[in-house]
Figure 1 (cartoon, helix red, strand yellow):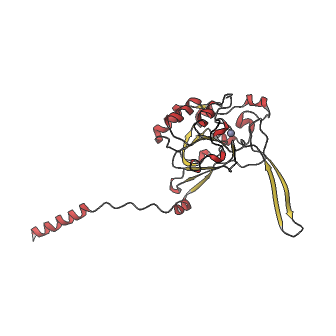
Figure 2 (cartoon, helix red, strand yellow):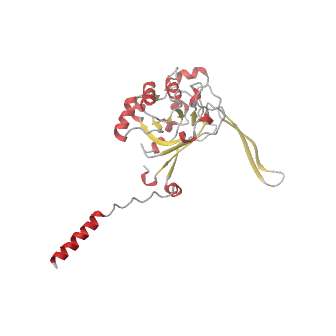
Figure 3 (cartoon, helix red, strand yellow):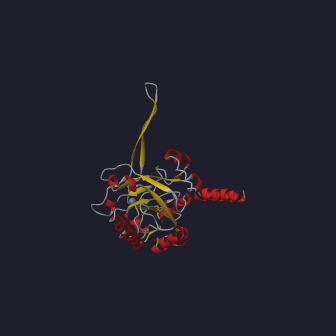
Length: 277
Ligand SMILES: [Zn+2]
């Protein structure tokens, strides 16, 4: 009896011990994941207060009709006009690199990607013309891992809180060629852009200032380095403080402006409901 009890116990152990590890549950369907996800707006609204480059035309809106028609139904319609590079907008690679992608040529899969959000708001608070360095990017990587391939790299300088106060946000509220010399805001250092091109495989760089190159730039080297590699830009991005450093998926969808050098863009992020900051 005793032997048989031992044998049974051994058998039980063997059965339990050899049981195949439980297969992980398959992920829920995408529609279910999206229903539980949190959406984050990263776009400034387009209106008559929208900030544009000093040499640019403003955004304008004209009501063409609003009210009851003679036939007894309500109807409203407007015209709008504005620059490709104003408000929250995309810089297509052709903006600074001949023969590179125009707005409609950027592949759709490049307009959706993992967000990597680098907070440089302390550095930018200390220096209004701060240039984000490769050291800043590497310090971020030491904490969060390598910037993933296809990433939409976002530089959070803290400037979007100053929108739409042109003087505070970009150093001047004047218009015209002379005002360009007064521009003051942070950007990405050309050496850091070169490091990204050489060492990583990002899709885009975005930031919450009017330009990838900092305010005093006259040669726009960061634009030129990135765009020669078909890396597009996102400028005047809003609300980056609401994003986690990693884990967000960012979507940046401009209208398909044929031959466009950029264009207004709606940028949103989607994060796992449980992982929301
Ligand atoms: Zn631009």
